[in-house]
Image (cartoon, rainbow, N blue to C red):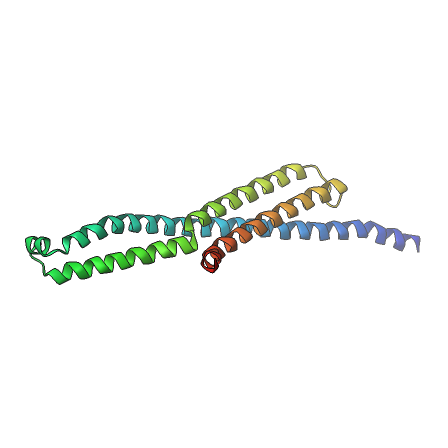
Amino acid sequence: MNEIVSERAAQQPSVIQSQFKEREDKLLSLVADAIGYYVEYGRTAQRYQRCAAVLVMVLSTLAPLLVAGSSSTWSKDLGLPDRSIGVAAFVVTLLLSLIEGVRRIFRFEQRWIGCYTAKETLKREREKYRFARIGLEIGSDAWKSNFAELRKAYDDVTGSETKEFFAAVQAPIADAKK
């Protein structure tokens, strides 16, 4: 009877340790997935921001030239019908305003910077956790404290980044209500 009790007591810490190890693996997987998300989404937002900025720059340079060129003198010098340059000026101005509107609504520049900051913070916190974990027994008080710090950092980063994203997206709506 005593052997059974002592055998169960010996097995219990290993079961608890395996449960803590599962929680640790799950959290580290969440952190790795979040880092991957921020890398990919940050690149996409950065690409959109750069494309939109270049298009706005080119179209904003071209629009006044086309408007000025729509006069009959310029169109004759270029050998084009008056109407075609006027239509081109309208189309370029319309595209310019649409691209600028999309850029302001989705705030790609803020989004990729937010993703980069979140990614770097998560990487730093994960490495800090891994370093502090060296030599700690799974389930010990120091291990639990270290684990709780990583969990808090993960929740803080993902929560604040998500909050900033939705605040930025909602900002034009709030401005329109005023």
